Image (cartoon, rainbow, N blue to C red; front, side, top):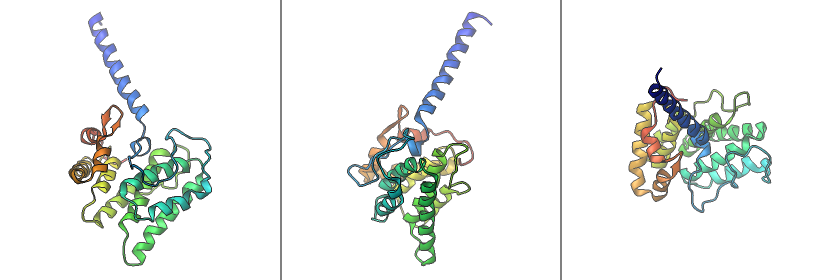
Length: 225
């Protein structure tokens, strides 16, 4: 192999390493990218890389999370609240199980009462997907076996149009299925024209590109992860 070919090979290897390094630094989008919610109430802030104990009493997390979700909270605030809850929940498997169990019961009870609550189904679906992205291999995952995306789709079917929920579904389906992902992304971007906070989130940066660019250029892998 001549020196020119070696140089090209070295450049190619460096480019591949750069891509994988940036991907690793970015981490899972449902966890590592905070949702902009302005001054809306949520759980106390916690850095996504934090794994140790905090000043926040985890015994209060399920109660505090439900109080926020039960107060007619916008979808974007729900997403950020569940993102923070997942980071906290990783510190205590019992807390993690308690939260998703309560959300599952809350959604099921709405069906049993004859008035399916779209937001309740969204909450448990989004939390299940967040758990899947953040619970490491070998760690107990209370969402194992749950299809959170299917629950989010159920929530969407119960609401006529919800661009913020479409945004959540687009983030969940970044790695497929491609047709569904592009449909969710298109509806989210269309709805952002009348939703300034959603528009800000689509324009926010993640891994050297905007979220809107990430949604549009997401590679399809054929199966939902």
